[in-house]
Length: 240
Image (cartoon, rainbow, N blue to C red; front, side):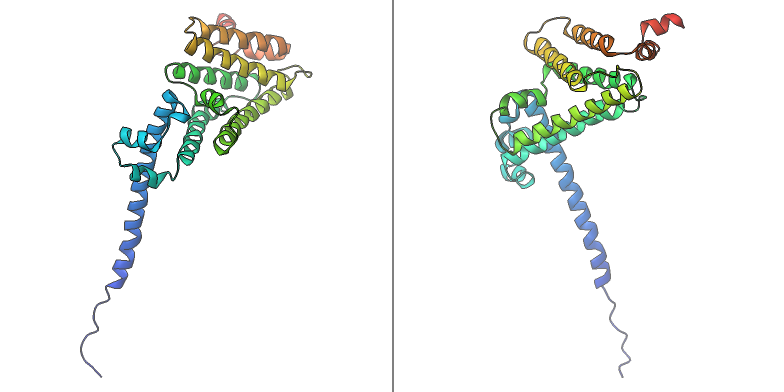
């Protein structure tokens, strides 16, 4: 039997170090992808989804084309990733903040007002939902499908908010939910057209006035009372 001590095992530390290196590599890759995607959003906002290319992004980010390509295997994949990221930001700024409001007219109003606020910020850049609809309205394919899916998801959220407002007794029982969604979306499209394309002053106010008229038409006496009692209402402020 040998009396020599067994050699120290060094394999375990190496095995432990490898996952750490992999994790750092994955984190760096995710950060790089996020930076590319942010640059792509900026380009798409000004140039449209069709203005996106691996080469243009390489120029903007200072990366090689192969470096960009490693994160987005094709132009189509890049476009879809931009649509998905835009929708995530839209949800965060508009939807998730609005649903903190009580269900009914307060929540519906919050959704519309935050939608208007986002469009007003995008006047100088552009809304990817709207520009994408123009670019891909007659072009079937995965990018169009992604755009349609995101807009439908937002319409479904609006639809649910309107149904809840009706169920709470804030809107008339015979209120046509699909018609209200149509009217609210129409106000946003008109706002974007007049503010961005026509540069007509007062477009924001007109969009707000249009929403108030829609509410006045469909709301019940209870709904109007709830709406007037909100903190930013002139009538509510006057009573206090």
